[in-house]
Length: 302
Image (cartoon, rainbow, N blue to C red; front, side, top):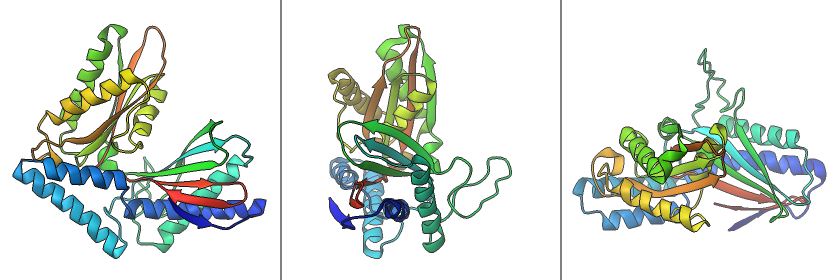
């Protein structure tokens, strides 16, 4: 963890801190690849036996090195800014002001840094050059009794990987075998388009919208982590083996590393439903986190 922040902040100043962090998280998430992703890419490069795959992975590692040396973006795609926010027990905050502050931070970062604004109207394709618009940034807000602070996780979701999003309302009779088949079908269909090796998020259960959200949330977990449920963790392992057995490889050019990880998140569902969703994150696995306390102190991490 990297420590930062003021010792104390008046209530109004807290929202100034959030505005500052909204911009910093958006910028830093695109310049500083998380350590677990770096380690997974290095490990993949070491175990790959396909020459072209080894060269592709070496190039990705070089891109990270160049970004580190020059404090520049790893990729030109600044993505859709998405905030995952968890409000801890005892934290009192004006939710509307919180969202406004984070939005202003994203807009300021786009104006003051060389960030390509990727956000447009879905009909007119108008771009306000602010990385924001109707419904953007996206905010997912949850509550937790396990923390006493505000947890803010920023994901800038690129279009190449986001385009590879899939949902299917399976039948209960399809069972686990049906889930596995659907995930593999999605991976084969996506091929090299999401810039593999990917981090594959799988959502199972819930309703259609919850299932899709679970799949995207799963991509945010540290590479190599496992679901706390043993059966779900076993499914993650089986899926990763099967995905890497497809031979799609880095950038779809062949090899043994099509995915760095498959993460599965679940919710219970209706007796007549068996929803499954797939969301892919490209090899960069970009994310940045801030833990913000009511007095204005905060920590920055991944």
